[in-house]
Image 1 (cartoon, rainbow, N blue to C red):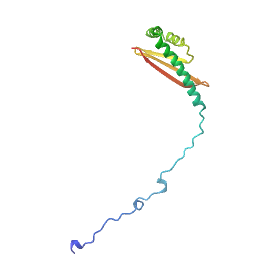
Image 2: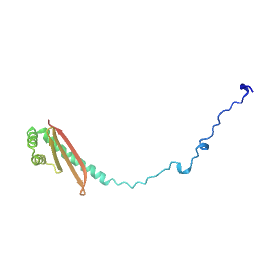
Image 3: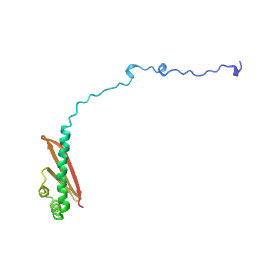
Amino acid sequence: MHYYLRPFHRPVYYPRNVYFPVYAHSLPRTYFRVYPEVDPTVFSESAESMQQLMKEASIILQKLSDSKEFASEVMKAAQQGNKEKVSQLLLSTGVHSGVKVDFNPDGINLNMTSEIEGKDCCHLTISLRWG
């Protein structure tokens, strides 16, 4: 038999599931999450409380920027490591929120917090550089 008379065989292509059967347990499953109803009350109260914190932070920042004498008193007390004096000076600006003070040779950090119904809700941290 001559080579040119030999029949030419082409590969037969079958659908994928002939070689790799797809079983029901291997199909991706769709999960539907059921979310609870949203109640924006606490979220709105937190936003309102944060606005108050920002107003009080603005009072402190205004006093520090307007009065170089006040700013130098705060810096001197911090340089001496007197956190109580720094806190008293900041509270003398008229703020009512809790202000925690932390400082280092480079600057000061003011951490202001507020609560809603006895639970922590809002935190505002102000970092100011002085060195």
